[in-house]
Length: 203
Image (cartoon, rainbow, N blue to C red; front, side):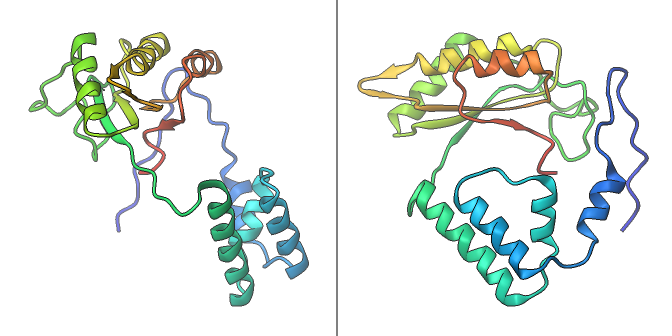
């Protein structure tokens, strides 16, 4: 496997991740069983785990303890979601993008891509089609581009929530887009989004 190219920050980027510290957390000794069970108990109370606690779970080597972690995860999932699978339908709002990620069809060097952004009427039509097929959740997707401002994305979220087909409507609108600053996330949150997924997180 070839090495990844050196990463360079964008003009206004700030590297706030302490790689050495995080690596140290994942390569330390295996935690004691009592510590693992305390962390499991905390998670079962639906309390967020610290980075250190999460790393401790990753260092567990004892197979019985690993199974306890898995069983706790299964039980927590059952308590929160029940025995169901939640699906959402994606809607690509716009594919203009300033980035050049090799894996992505939105990449700026992709000369074959037809760049466009859906109009409000097109968004309404697509959402109406989804709702008419029984969809109740969607994730709207944007490239990273100056025209896709937090306000624009928030307006799209509100537009989607406003589409009604008979008694049907979208009950949850998620957003898949680039990282934002705190003010940008605040604007998006005020539009009552479900979740905000930063699109590079899974690659």
